[in-house]
Length: 256
Image (tube, rainbow, N blue to C red; front, side):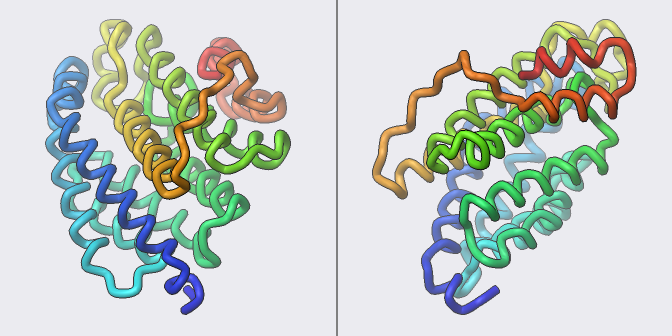
């Protein structure tokens, strides 16, 4: 971290985003608990609310915060406060990805952060598109954000808005498919018809990041053209190859 980054105010902006996420997760606690009650331990809402509340407090206590330090502080707090698999997935991946923000928050570092975060979530959870996990929301969101920045040359706020839209459709994608990971997988086909709580939490987090970014720029949240593609062709091919079964092509397209 450089003194320049700390002085830029980016760290304070990230703290504000963390506080907004904590408030949103607390507001959605019962909804997340209900989702998890149907297919899991019914503790996702409580665990996430407690973890993000502690994370927001830890972040706000930082002196001269910079984005990397805030991300790593939040990640470590989530790892210690959020039980089950969600702590390592949400928090551990954040600790790893936080290093990508060492030079501050730019379109390039934001893409690198998002890609590293997704990679770590996939590795830690051994999950891919179509497993009915948070990966189904994060994958189209990250690919959309990257494509919007690097290919379509969109401003970051527009790129983030498209990523949130892609994540929302990714969450919907978890409803009609069978869970293949976590406690929900124990239900087999009975897991079909249920929205994944982890994917839902990921969407809430992205929505708050977008809202805070729009507030910081004093702009309205951009409207999204939902007809535009969200996953580049090469990403679809990579995901299909990684999954390697006969249902993955359709799964990848569905998540987009």
